[in-house]
Image 1: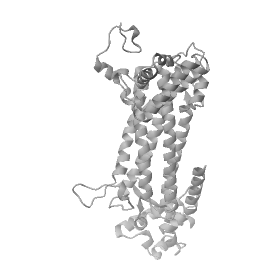
Image 2: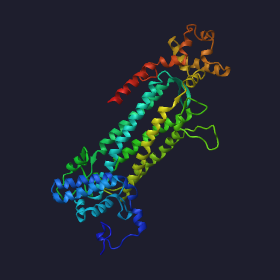
Image 3: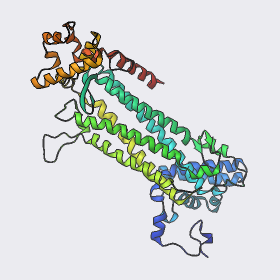
Image 4: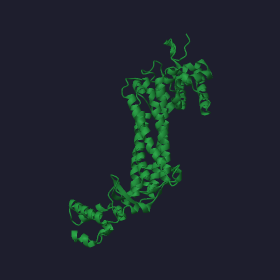
Length: 460
């Protein structure tokens, strides 16, 4: 009987071509071609080290794999759907290079631990790029914040003017969010830096392998302690996708505000031309398309997470073919978040800040109402009573189009004779921001402290 598949010894009939195409993963898992060859090299070196294979056979296989690495780098390898996945494609290509001895490479190994190893390696390498891009974004934020410590803008709650704040303080809020994102990805490295190689299909192997040897060859810091666990879970991937989703949520929120603030109604920011586009019909348009794209791409990363959670939620131990669906979401998330970080960093770094427009937005918006209430409290008026008094003054001001700083001193002294001319100094937005010295507040000294701490973190 002619056996076409490497696993087809107990089969009498082959599937239809369209069925093979449906079951094949080479269309996407070829992205792990480098990692697959790297894993195979570590495995065969371990087989040589433990004398499971002779030195001669192992060296033949090593030479063949190294040739495939060179061809891969040169773009000379072609993969076939008939060989299903990257692992079997590489084995076929290796056989073409060195002959039947290639079949000994799979000794003491299964595609189950092989694919898990490939995915661990793939994600381990990409995590370094994600972390590097995140740090670069943090550097951009710190530089922008340093240049805008005393730039005054409205602070918002419910998208309503709340209290004036420093634009640098605003930026450093996002720095802290991205810092926690960075910490999550750093923690993700711990669970990615574990080797499944040697777990075989699910139960380990009878061959005297040395899993710690192959793990060291691949640069893993540890090995899975349980062979079932090694091949059956993808929590390190879910952790990555969760972290990526939170990151994209933070980027999306930032982009939402950039989009709003570039509008005519706000006018706080203007994006550099290279991060905006025009309209095919309206000559005046300058659209924040890159920010909109990042905001939109958050949805696909959320979908990648939900897709894998749904795939994994009902799987019995150990490996199931469902887990072939674990890769495309990872590839997509990596392909999405790295360019998003790069584009966002450039967009923010080159954005023009309209300081005058920001400050002007705080002048007649009653966002200094809390300052007046605090001032009254310092004169001995209970804060709740002060709050009510200021609320009435705001209502009067809205009806008469009179800002709090335009109310005559005589009117203030009707409320309390102890109110002096110094009240007008406290009502200035710049002064209101500068005076907020509480730890973590928007006072200039506190913003500078945040920036200094951030610079120390980034210098580590």
